[in-house]
Length: 524
Image 1 (cartoon, rainbow, N blue to C red):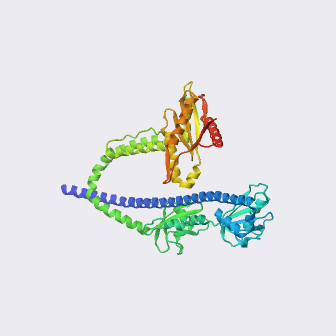
Image 2 (spheres, rainbow, N blue to C red; image 1 turned 180 degrees about the horizontal axis):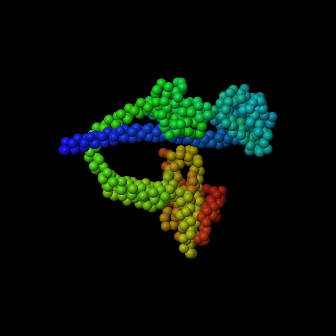
Image 3 (spheres, rainbow, N blue to C red; image 1 turned 30 degrees about the vertical axis):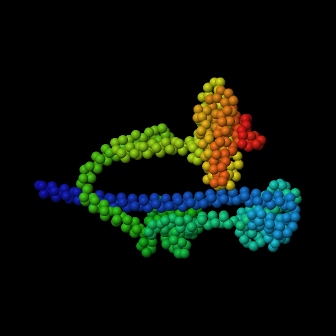
C-alpha cells in the first residue's frame, strides 16, 4: 500500500507539475506578448509626444519670429519715413538691411513696383506678376496705415529661393516696405520633425523595427533602419496593420511570422514589428529555468501558497484598493494605513506621500511655490466671506516691470530666478495678513485681510516694497539688481463682495499705476 500510495502521489504531483508548467508556458507567452505590446505602445507614444513637442516648438518659434520680423519691418519703414535718401541706392538699402539684421530689404511704390532694394536685380519687379509677390498688393489696397502682411516661408518669385517676407505700409506716402529672411532656424527645426530622424533616436531591440505608414496612401514615411530598402512584406501593408492596434501576428509568404503593433495618430500609423522567433527564444529562456524550480519547490508552494498569499498579501491589497478607491473618488484626505509587514507600511507611506504631493501640486505653482490662481480665488473668497465686522480686506494685483527684457537679455533661467526672488519676498510677509499667488507669467496677486483700517493695507504694501527694494538678485556675474514691480489694490468691507470684482478693480489700479510710472502701486 505504501508503494502504491507513493506511486500514485508521485504520478499526481508529476502530472500537476507538467500541467502547471504548460499553463506557465502559455501565461509566459501571453506575458511576453503583453510586455512587447507595452514596449511598442510606449515607444509609439514617445514618438507621438516627440512629434507634438517638435510641432509646438515650431509653432512657438514661428510666432516669436513673426513678431520679431514684423518689428524689423516697421523699423525699416520708420527709418525710410525719416530719411528719404536711404531708398535711393542699393548700397544704402544694403547698409540699412545689415543694420536691421535682415537678409533683404525692398521698397515698393504705389503701383506695386520694386523701386529700391538691397538686391539690385530685384529693382523693377512688378509685384502683380507672381503669386508669391501678389499677396503684398493687399497692403496697397488697404486704407489702414498700419497694414502689414507676414508671409509663410516659400520659394520667392525672383530666384526660387526659400524666403520669408514681411511687408508693412509705408509711412507718409503710398507704398510698402518689405523685408526678407532666410528661414534657416525653421528649416532646421522641421528637419528634426521627420519620422526617419525621430526613429533614428529611438533604441531598438534585436530584430525590432519601427516605421510610420500613411493611412491614406499606404506609403512608408520612415523606418528605423532607413528608407533605402523595399517595403514589400505583408506587415508593411495598410490592411494588415489596421488589424494590429492591439498587437497581433502577421504571417509572411515565406512562413515567417511577425508580431506587429500599430497606433493611429492623425492620418499616420506609428508601427513596430518583431520576428515571432525572437519572442519564442525569450519564451524558452524563461520557461526552462521555471521548470527546474518547479520540480524543486512545487510541493512546498502548493501547500503554503494559498495561506501565505491570503494572510500576508491579498487582505492587505484589498484594504489598499478600498482606500485607493476613496482617493480616486476625490477624497484626498483619505490616509492609507496598512500594516503587517514593512512592504505594506512603505507602500502606505508612499501612497500617502504621493497624495500629499498631488494635493500640493494641485494648489501651488511649481516654479514659485505660491498658490495657483484658481486655489487663491477659492481661499480668498472664503476669507472675504468670513471677514469679521469692522474689518476690511484688499485685493492686490502686481506685475513685474520690464520682465520680458530680463528674459531676452539674461535668458529664461535668470527670468525664473527673478520670479522666484519676487515670490520669496511675498512669502516673507506676515501670513496672518497676506494670501499670495502667482496668476500667470509675471503677474501676481495678494489678498490682504484682518485689517481694521486702510492704513494697515498701505503699511503692509509699503513694507513689501521696502523688502523688495532690499532683496537683490544676481542676474549675471556683473549685474546685481532688485526686483521691480508695479501694483494696484482695491479695498472692501463688504463680506459679500466677489473676489473677481476686487481683482478686476485692483487690475485697473495696476494699469493706471504702470501708466503713471512703474515701480510703485496705486489704489482703485
